[in-house]
Length: 145
Length: 308
Image (tube, rainbow over all chains, first blue to last red; front, side, top):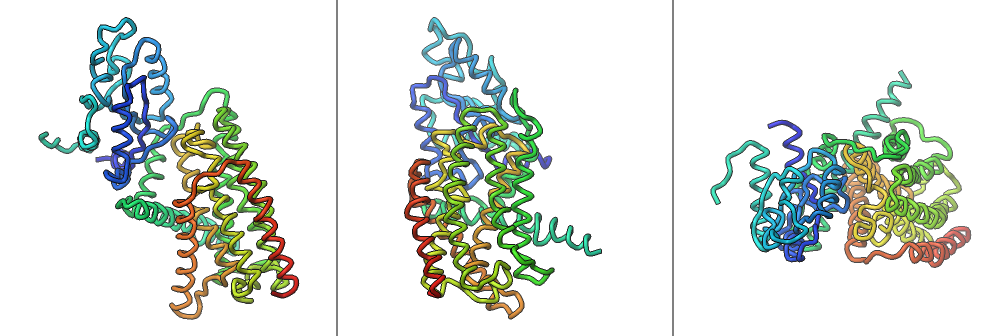
């Protein structure tokens, strides 16, 4: 395991990139960062600027207009940056697949490192997703869910 | 030889490396105490080191239209000034070299440079939110500098000297009534100098999304974070030196322990204020510092003239 991977996985700054989500996933993300789960134990903190981000938490359906902003935000983030698609919407388009302005799921626009389905996913599921992502990066075996 | 010894002091002890390490440990204390106040476990001991080292491996984004040279060099100015200020303070504690007449004034100037570096960096980045953060930082700097310098006048009036080692030799000024008032004023100014809550309007995560640091990423952001940590170490040490009689290293372990306790007490006071106060608007902060705080500092200076 390289020094860079070691440092990156020990200090993940999370940026929440909301794309017209129904707010359920956003509320669950905020729940995950409350004292009850205390993610600062693992060095995970929420940041306000996409330039400071190591992880983009993408929520909501990205339609033809907001996908442009999604690509721009990804371009502006300092690399290396990881992307987690939180909820059914960014993973698949959910019930908006037939919508007139929906085009493609998020992984067609930007590379996604972890898919986290659920409507909304529980905070425990989010922590598990981060743990799996960290273990994948560190080259360890994944725990059986 | 003399010059080499001085450069070694600047770069290793008690300058850059020592201040950086001590600052990161202090910022761990800050985060751990914050976590305990919020009934959390808090980050591991090495977390601030990981945070800064991680930023060193990240990409440096330079936004279009940025004043490139200023954008990249501003963090270095701030860090160099913080390291130099810390070195001058520690030279008074440990007889590494001579202190010189007027070193308090030099330290006061050096301690404003990190804030100036933040202002320059935020304006260089051309981002409207960062510029707003920079202008707030500038107003805050103008607001707290006046009472801070007035508070520093109190021990200077008591000892009739502007040399740090004379202040240390004269003993703790907080034993006098004017010293207590001056220390309280200085703690409030320290809170604003470190841009911690309630005076964190320049970086207001919720309204300015990181404020002055908004466009920074990678190593320059890491240097800014390191500078903040170094200031979190240097400011309480400066107040301990000026008001509380400093830390004596030549009389066994008891004065050293006492000095460390004084320092930790100031740090914990800062952390507790930051955790129990809401953010004030920038106009409220300016009114607060130019109104009651300056009046209190003036009263302390007058009292010091009368020998209280």
